[in-house]
Length: 112
Ligand code: SF4
Image (tube, rainbow, N blue to C red):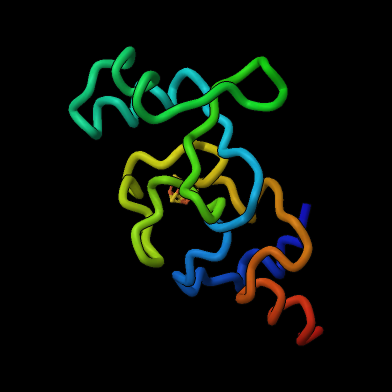
């Protein structure tokens, strides 16, 4: 986890880079409920149309676009932002990957 003084100064630049990483946006039950409701779908239809089995074979994950970005990324924006999954909401506060976010990288390299 990052230093709290760094996190206090972090501001998302809205570039969408974190939604373009290859990998999985893992879903919890609450995420599925919230996203289905946000999209006006039943949970069953949401699961059928927007998810796949994650590589861990224990959870569902959101579908990807052909370039590996999240299927819900539209331009640089999350099209389901208000109902985005916990994994997305908790970045970079609960977890992060090095060189994963230009705004965070600038903060970390500035050494301020
Ligand atoms: S759900 Fe939204 S915030 Fe999460 S990876 Fe997809 S586009 Fe990004």
